[in-house]
Image 1 (spheres, one colour):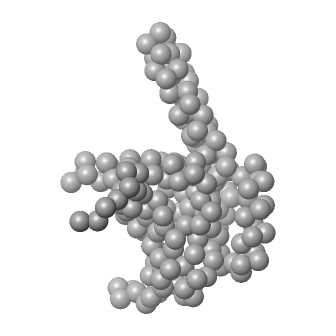
Image 2 (cartoon, rainbow, N blue to C red):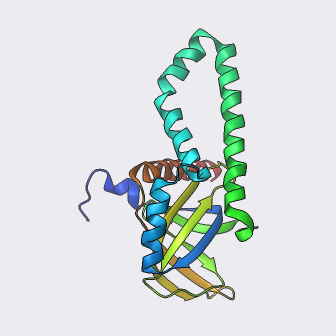
Length: 190
């Protein structure tokens, strides 16, 4: 049996999901430049989505109190929340551009993911990754390093495995929450 730290277990599980995925290979210099730009970019739809999720978590107690005190007001707030989520989803899709017309099957965890592609990558190659889950509106913009790339036995192309790098703790927390929700949904479907 492997000894694990208390929080480590939840970050090591993986789920199958379908995402809109855009990625681009980068040199080490490009990674550093984009990483600095990304840290300062508050106009990104992905940053906006993260901030909205954080605000939703911070106001959860107030929302529950509001539901008890005024169900009509709570319903209005929920409707406005859904409208904002939809606007952010459209903004993220616009930011993804035409790079990802169809959802891609991925095996994703808090530390990385695997996906199929027609493009081969060298192990160690840095990638700029943007993904969005259409079913939930969850989005993530991060950088990753290719840890494996091999020919796909099922179809033409390659199976690529990446490890996320420079993932902000708030993004990791949102990713873990998404993974838990997805896992719960998959278990209910059984």
